[in-house]
Length: 117
Image (cartoon, rainbow, N blue to C red; front, side):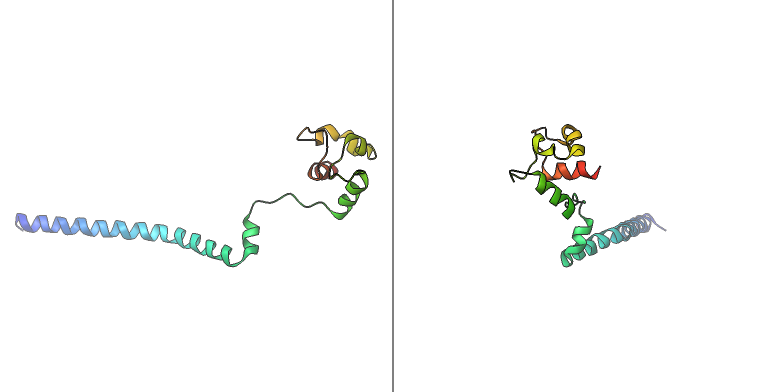
């Protein structure tokens, strides 16, 4: 083999290695890309699946809790003052801890949290 043939063989070997590397990259990442594309398509086609994968939202208040909140909310402003909460000793006892935003009232969400306990 002369010098020209050696350099051509070297170039061909390098090209083969590059093709193998490219193919290897594609095959390694093909599954990841495929899964991502299929997942995105499935979420767009079925909104119920999108809701399942979304972060969990706080549970809605049960009918029983809503009824209790409504009875205690004497002025129907959608929040409980300490005076209104006095009708429920357990809620009144935990009022300050449950009032997360420290506005002096329990919102429905705050009420639901303290009622769960």
